Image (cartoon, rainbow, N blue to C red):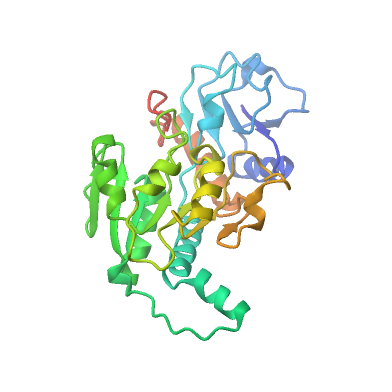
Length: 312
C-alpha cells in the first residue's frame, strides 16, 4: 500500500493519478480508512509530526522534493530508505532560472536599469561571456545540468563540491581547502548545494568578500536557488549596500514567505522571486514514483536513495 502525505500541494490530484498508474496496487490518502501497518511506501512533502506513526511495515519513504534537509529533521523519521525526486523536467526548470539570472547579471542589467531611470546614456560594454567566470557550488544532478546549459553560451565555468567531479569544460574544486581559490576566480556565484550542517550559512559576508573583483561592473554577484538556510540575509544586505556584492538573485529565504519587513524587498540590486525556480511536475513525478514502486515490488533496487550521513 502507498500512503500520500502531501502538504501545501494538491494531494487529491496526485492520488488520482497514482491510483491510475499503479492499479491494482492500493493507494490511500490521510483521510481514508486503512491499516497503517499495511503501508509499505509513503509519499511525502512537508510531513506533519504524526506522519509516520504506526507505519511499522514501511519499505521506503518517497520524497516529492529534490532536497531532503527538512525531511531529515523530522522528529519521528523512520529508519527506512529515503528516495528523492530526480527528474529531467525539474532540472530543466532550475537551469532555466540559473541561465536567465547569470545572463542578466553578465549583461549588467542592474547598471543599465539605473541608467534608464536616470535617463543617462552611458555606453559601458559588458565583458564577453568567455571573460566572465561562473562558479557553481554543488555539482549533483542540478549543478551538472546548469553547467551543461551554460557551456554553449561561452562562459568560463568552475565548480565546487564536497567530492571531486571531473566534468569536461568545468574547472573543478573540491573540499574546504580549495574553497578560497574557487571563490577568488569567480564573478557570478551560483548556489545549488544540498543543505547540510556543513553548508548552512555558507553564503555569508566572508564568502562574498573573497569573490573576484574588477571583472563585472559594480562587483561580483550571487545567485541562490537552493535553500534559504544557505544564506545569511543580514550579510547579503550589508554586502549589497557597501559594494562587496554588485547584485544578488534570491529564490529562497531564511523565513518563507519572505516577511514584508525584510529589507531585501526594497534593495534595487537584489532580485527576489518567491521560491519558484523549479517545481516538481505532477505528470513526470507520477511516472517516476510509480516506476520505482513497481520495480521495487518486483525485487529491484531502489534508486536515488539518500545518504543520511551526508544529508543528500
